[in-house]
Every structure is written in structure tokens, then in C-alpha cells.
Image (cartoon, rainbow, N blue to C red):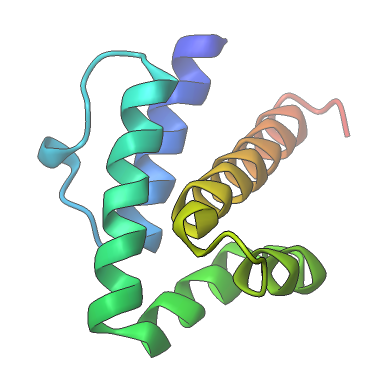
Amino acid sequence: MENQLYTALLQKLSQDFSLEENSLPVEADMNLIREHLIERIKELMSRNYERFLNSLYRIDLSEANVHEVLHSKDKLSIPSQLADLIIERQLQRIKTQILYREGKL
């Protein structure tokens, strides 16, 4: 199931952040995915902030959590905190979809 989660996570991140799947890590290593996502978040925040916010909205992150992160005092940790929220939310969505498909919801 973990491999299924990893594959689905890569697909969702690719869709939500317009990432080319071949640019994402092929190893099932969450740290590599996280680092890649942090770089993409930094890029979007600096180049296209509106698109960045739209991506967060599309992912359906908690507005309160996003607000808390974006207004934190440690500005350097914002991309990594957001990456953690995004990965957590995407995994939540994926697990729900799998359970729904299996008829367990």
C-alpha cells in the first residue's frame, strides 16, 4: 500500500503544482519528494504568488493552518512548513480515495 500511496502522491503533486513527473524523484523517498516540493514552493512564491495561493486552495489546505504558516516569524521555514502541510493533506486525500474505492467508506 505504501508504494501505491507514493505513486498517487507524485501524481497529485504533479497535477497541483504543474510538475513534470519525470522531474520528481523516482525512489519512494518522502524526503526527496519534500525537498523537491520545497523548491517548487519557493519558486512559485517568488514568481507567481497568485498561482501559488490557487494551488493551496485547490489542494484544500486548512485556511487557518496556511495563515499561521504564512504569518510565522521564521520566514525561512515557510516553504518547508507548507510542504509538510501539503504532503500531509495529499496523503489524507489519497487514503480516503483508496478506502472509498475499496468500499470501506
